[in-house]
Image (cartoon, rainbow, N blue to C red; front, side, top):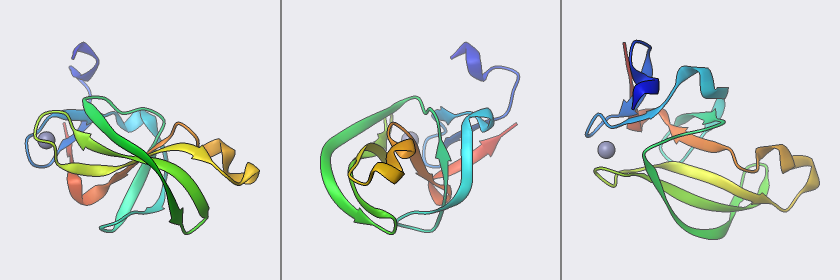
Length: 105
Ligand SMILES: [Zn+2]
């Protein structure tokens, strides 16, 4: 957990498990299941669910829901595979709903 010491980070709103760093925010212009969301290049302390195809605003993707590793609150999803070649840059990225995280300083 050393990477979270002495710098701001995002944590799970329910249990305060550290899940992401502001440096890893790739885009703030996303909209997830519950509202506005951020795209991250990397998250930590989450577990992924089963990969399944889902139709999103920008097309069909194979996605896996992500859950807090501590309290198992659903937080968003991981783009596993894009069916549209133009959306390939999203593969391996994570969408985290802002209503599920809180920024810690
Ligand atoms: Zn949690």
